[in-house]
Length: 239
Picture 1 (tube, rainbow, N blue to C red):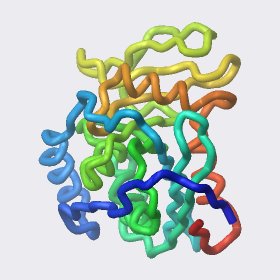
Picture 2: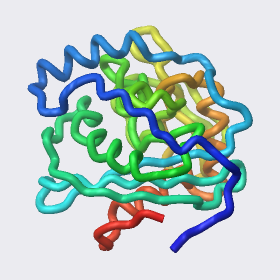
Picture 3: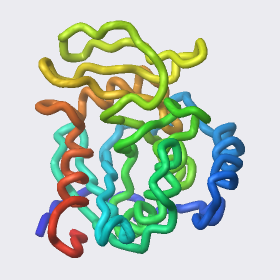
């Protein structure tokens, strides 16, 4: 069991359920087009940032059960403070561009279990680098009103210039003449990651925090730990 003495911190996760989750694709598009206008791409972080969280998903029983993991780490030393893993029935199919409708219900359940509320959430997916500028990092950040960043492993939309093989270098990700994110080199010799604003974080700040959360590997420590929890064989973990 993981434990740590931590300073007093807000323990009330405020979740604003803006809509139902059993939806048609047309209804999901309407929600994305409505809510993306509320996304804030300027810095509104609580300073100093003390806790960063990663969220990730796994699926069981041929995708019918969603398994969500949250890992809360201290910042900047990136030590695991608290984790939560929950399972619930999957209610939305896998369709590119609609990841949040498939994954967020279980992620919200996992977030409700934690007692240390993070100052920043890093999502394994897109933020505004999305056809309707409303990827999972935007959706989640808006529902819990916590600054959030999308850190995706693959490109969904947009184009960019060639990226040098130097850690920390990045190129703007452009779609329809708009900068929607950045392709970022977090480690030499491996594929880059795709960073975009989720909610209440600017792109330069998002790049900075992603780099500070990736001291050794390609992916942020938040994502790596949440991914291990989401894909492990244990049935439940909440520390």
